[in-house]
Image (cartoon, rainbow, N blue to C red):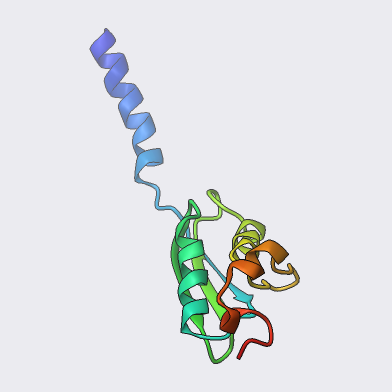
Length: 110
C-alpha cells in the first residue's frame, strides 16, 4: 500500500518538476562610461540570485538582463548597479560606491 501511495504521489508531482521556469528580460539605463564600468556592472549582476545573463552596451549605456522573476526583482537589479557605483534608471549611485571607482569611472571622469 505504501509503495502504491508513493507511486501515485510521484505521478501527481511529476508535472511540477518538469515545468520550465520562465525568464524575463529587462533593460536598465546606467551611467557607465567605459569598459571597466561595463565589467563592474555585469559582474554586479552575476552575484544576484536568479540572474541568468547580463550585458551592457556601452554605446547606449543600457544593461540587458535576463532573469527569473520568482528569484529576483528589477528593483534588486537596480540596487545592485547602484551599489556598484552607477545610476540605474531612476536609482542614483551610492555615493560611497562612486568614491571606490577609479577616477576615470566617476562622473565627469572621461
